[in-house]
Structures are given as C-alpha cells and as structure tokens.
Image 1 (tube, protein in one colour):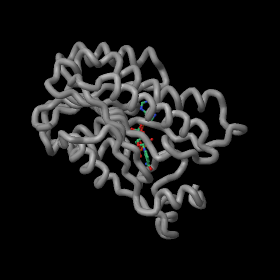
Image 2 (image 1 turned 90 degrees about the horizontal axis):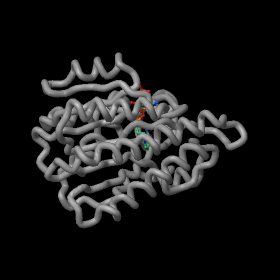
Image 3 (image 1 turned 180 degrees about the vertical axis):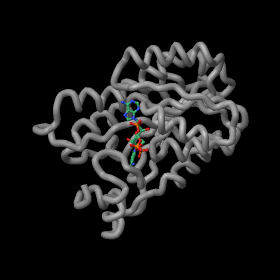
Image 4 (image 1 turned 90 degrees about the vertical axis):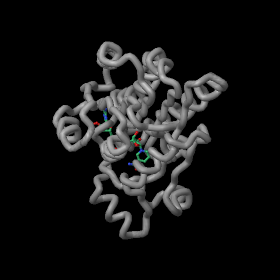
Length: 247
Ligand SMILES: NC(=O)c1ccc[n+]([C@@H]2O[C@H](COP(=O)([O-])OP(=O)(O)OC[C@H]3O[C@@H](n4cnc5c(N)ncnc54)[C@H](OP(=O)(O)O)[C@@H]3O)[C@@H](O)[C@H]2O)c1
C-alpha cells in the first residue's frame, strides 16, 4: 500500500507506541487523525510533526457516549478514511481477588469495546477508501495466560477473537484486518514505568524499543501480502513469560 496522502485514524496517539508510530506516519506524508484522552500530550505531539493536515480529537474510551460523539465529529470532518489503527489500551495487572469491577469494566471498554465501536461506526468511511485497513494492537497476553492479569488477558484475547473473526467475515472484500500480537515494549504501559522495565532489562529481559515497533508497523501496512496476525515477540519472550519472574 502506498501511504502518501492516506488518512489514518490512530488511537492512543500520544502514548509510547502511538506517538512514535504517528511520527513515522508523518514522515510518510500520511494525514493523521489523532485520538487521545489527554489534550496537552496530543497538542505537544502535533506541534512536533511536519505535516500540515493532521488533526486531533479528545475522547475518553471509558464512555460509550464519548466514542459515539467522536465518530460523529470524524464523519463531519472526513469523507474517507484509509487506515484505522487501534493502539489505545490500559494494563490493570491484578488478581481476580484484588481487581475492582470498575477496573475490569474500564479494561474491556478501552481495550475491546472502543476498537469494536470505532470499526463498526467507521466502516462506511473506510469503505470509501480503495484499500482500507484496520490494525489492532494486541498482545502476547492475548494468546498466553498471565497470572494476575485477568482483565488485561481477557480484553486482549477478546481483541484477538474480534480481529480474526472480522478478517474472516471480510475475506474477499476490500476492507482488511490485521492483528499485531506484540510482546514487551519499553514504554510506561500498565503498572511498570520505563525505569522498572530498564531494571528488568539489566537482569536480562528483552524489550523492543517503540521506534522499532513503529517502523515495523509502517512496513506491515505497506506490505500487500501481510498476514492477518503478525506476532512480534522480543527474544526469549515466550520462555520469560513462562517463568514469569519479571511479572
Ligand atoms: N508496552 C508494552 O509492553 C506492550 C506490549 C504489548 C502490547 N501493548 C499494547 O500497545 C498499546 C499501546 O501501549 P503503550 O506501550 O504505548 O502504552 P502507553 O504509553 O500507556 O499508551 C497507552 C495509550 O492508550 C491511551 N488510553 C489510556 N486510557 C484511555 C482512555 N480511557 N481513553 C482513550 N485513550 C486511552 C493513553 O492515553 P493517555 O496517555 O491520555 O491516558 C495512551 O495514549 C496498548 O494497547 C497495549 O496493550 C503494549
């Protein structure tokens, strides 16, 4: 797929992975529609970009009504969308005994229901594109169980199920779906800060840097022969998560 002048809606746009990915899209002359919860961080990001046609919308994915309002605003502003990339997510790492119902509900709302609603409501705009593509950022926690991550694993298993189902549902049609099943990345995601992750790295745990992930995502989008699910695990990831000493 040629990226120049394509329109990409990116959620989690100012996060660790989202912001580096948006910078790569900017270099490729993609017009980005940045979706974020926090206005300050997205304003800072947009002012660092070269492209003049980027826009942003603020939305808290915990609230369905806000997502529906967001969709209306996007539909008013854009006639066509080429890419929808669902990056936003939260990581509540708690046992079933400790987790609150509200944390479970937020995890499902942000990690699973927001991509569902955005896909469902933006299909008409995606179908205006010659080669529309939806990318959902999943996790190793969507194909392997991790202890004390009941909400995170459940939401990412759900995201995987949804993406693979939609890929099948749309087989032979132009709208394509792709799931990125991603291992550990050096960001502040979930309860672990970058400093915590750096400590783990010193003890031998491997992390991707977000810049590598961002470049890889752009390569995946450009690849016309991409698989429906692409697994990106840093070295030893499967062994490490089995041992679970870092978790
Ligand atoms: N880092 C990893 O090791 C790793 C591994 C596998 C998969 N992933 C996946 O990669 C994605 C991005 O993670 P990251 O590492 O870039 O972490 P991050 O820096 O914490 O980014 C998370 C993004 O989600 C947004 N978000 C959180 N709550 C939201 C809400 N209520 N409404 C709307 N947006 C919300 C955040 O916005 P605010 O900052 O404004 O809250 C932020 O932009 C997630 O889906 C995660 O599951 C990460």
